[in-house]
Length: 111
Length: 114
Image 1 (tube, each protein chain N blue to C red):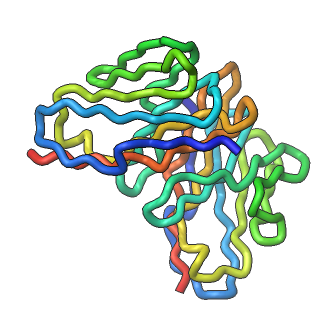
Image 2 (image 1 turned 30 degrees about the vertical axis):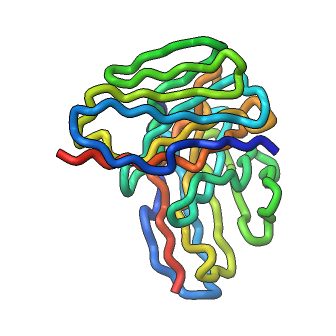
């Protein structure tokens, strides 16, 4: 089945720093999704990407759909303490609607 | 986006018992899904809840262990049967509203089995 490799597994940064994380897949994806999960809550959609090469921003977050359609990255600029959480990439795993998730990137921001 | 409510939000259960988790959406949705998130892990799809018919289970998940109902377009239940400590996880409901919108998730049910 589809596999997503997400890195890094965890990051410890200082407030104000920029962050970058990425995901690669073993096969072509038609959609890339980035979610954030805060403690005690479900994942919340941050950015959805639908087209190879697409670059989309949501506030301080920017994500890109790789040209090869096998990778995507998420950047967070000028991090703040509330950016703390687990970030997941996800994409359709073999069908139009079933999602495969990466293992997540745990982000810690030191004030 | 749709508002998704899951009940209970958490529970502590005894080994061998069963628990039914409810997922209620404030609007009709095309697709409803159930995921498991084991401690410190990512999300794994258990099954797709089909309205008016049997759920479609993913490899490694069976109906006897995780019976699912979806009587209408706004409600679904997941039962975790004959629980063991290995079933301690977060169970999450997600929905697709249609029109190409990505899945949105409820806040999950945190289940601990003693």
